[in-house]
Image (cartoon, rainbow, N blue to C red):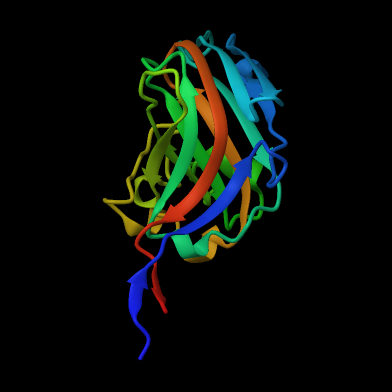
Length: 213
């Protein structure tokens, strides 16, 4: 009889070494009358992307706007990692910033529409968002965001979750959804302040996956 063991399943979603989709573009709130500023560059020598900018209030809303980068592409099937986490290899010179978020559009027909609505407008399910923090330090570190920390029901003005996965399983990412990831977004939103985030890779991972040997 074969033995049962645990073997990690890692699905690299994006990296900057040319092996996976990595064409990100910068976007921020001036499209909605805001005053936030941001840039996106890739350090080819170090093989990482750099999101840099400042989140400022949107005058019409009298509330913080956003700075973001996104990548639309055909990503690998990550369904086998649904019980695990997203692992971001990152570092930041602004670890005190509290508005970092990651969004994954999965199992939706229109990722851009879903990531604008956060389930608050008809047909906008399927953009799963979760907050994350980056520890202080000069080295790249792995930041783990469990898939059960994501929700596709959130406030489009702040990015804050309206309903959590713990409260309602209907808002959680599913294995079926993670088969067809169509967009990744890394955001700084809902809190004013300067932001600087360097991203080496984003991977879906499940350390508890079971295999037979």
